[in-house]
Image: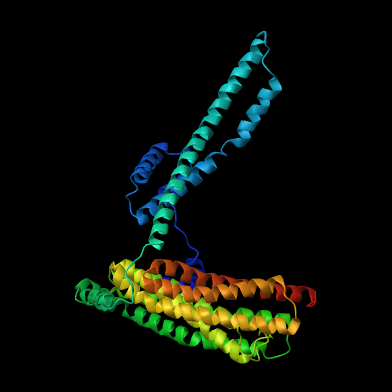
Length: 462
């Protein structure tokens, strides 16, 4: 219990790191990366398995991606091995150079000849592992490139493949039944676990912890943002200054971190209950990341389009426009989170393509509408900016291009999805929404750098 409560206290760091966590190398390979010699027998088995998979090109994409991750780890091992004994090799080479070239007539002192022979033998021993690592690195790199080519080819084929149209009424009943079956399975897992005496005993044993986690998580999830916002308003209530802005900015992070702590506590309560089945655990393990997408989008929307009267506001955006921008950005983050949730459900429950296309189509429509509204809002802002300054800077031109791209994408994606090119619509739409979030992060970081400079130098004009 203490471990779980402590984990809740440090979840801010865990939450920020979870979205960046990659594929960890297998323990045997991670240990081997720091030890010598390399187990080339194990590597040869892995390489032959990869070569067979590449030649047949029948393995699933997930299997190929897993195999690729293993090859990447091996490649890193070989890359480090290429620099092994570098200083010793260089020393031996310098010793050979100091001896000078071997006399053409062969008239060389026996001691010098013996030393030259020993150094050449030593150099060969030192370079042998390096050359072996170079060959293995080249082999691993070639197979990684081959797997990448297979995966890219499959992705390209999937994007241009015409699938079932979500507007076809024939597919609607199947979609409704698919959602109902998924709900029934999740409910059945909980009921089955409850009727299991061992799992019911575990639930009763952990009930105080579960209740505590749910209460703490619920309070932080519901009230965390308002607490942070209220404190931010108090800090910013005064003359504008870089120090005051920095303090308000740091406190505003609470509206992101506190709800993340809350959702983490709730997911931990689900695990601690012992009533979660395999599919339920798979969803709970992804819940924090999905909610984080929504919370980050909401926080960014509040930073880019702050309320009226806030010293952090953009001066050339009126209160109604800022309010609309906050709403569009927040709901867009929600739409992206729902999309990835549906993707996780489709993978967990093996949904068919017709059903998934119908289920995801309303989310595509919603995300497209929000991108369209954001594109128009940006265009309106740029028009007022140009009218006031009369200048056409590179930044304004780039922003105008972005606004037009958003509008075009918002119109194109639903049309493609309605025609049956749902995968292509997804590929264009949702990564673009995430890219828009990245651009918002860059804007916030730019303002942060400016205020840091003013705080240190005291020169805002500079």
